[in-house]
Amino acid sequence: MRVRRQRVKTSDYLSDALTLLSGWERDGVQIKRELACDDSQHAALTERIKVAADTLRIRPSIRRTNGHTQICLGDRDGDAITDGEVTLAARIEDFYRTVTAPHSS
Image 1 (cartoon, rainbow, N blue to C red):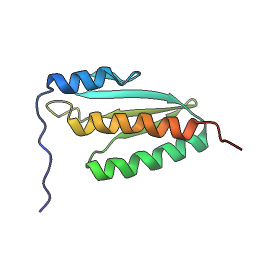
Image 2: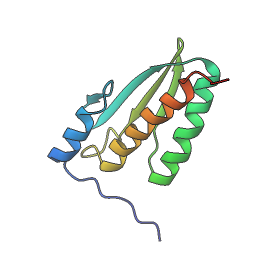
Image 3: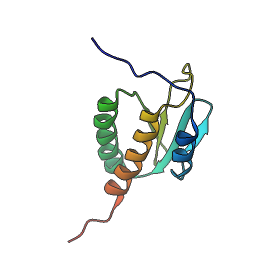
């Protein structure tokens, strides 16, 4: 039996954690971020996001447009942003730094 995480009302600790994630914008019960990256970086970033999202049982919306990757976390029909979504946003920041870091020789 699969257990689905309950959405809880956004508590202070989630709001505080979200404020530490620069670049993420809150839009109701969703959080969004746009990242500049080339096509190969987008592919590497997307792969990492999908693995982490599967683990957290979250379905992010990821789009590629005009040299940017747009990411949206949260369900428009949901009640609140979850701790898992904030966790995934933090992981995405780490992934982005990794895929855009200059390669050392």
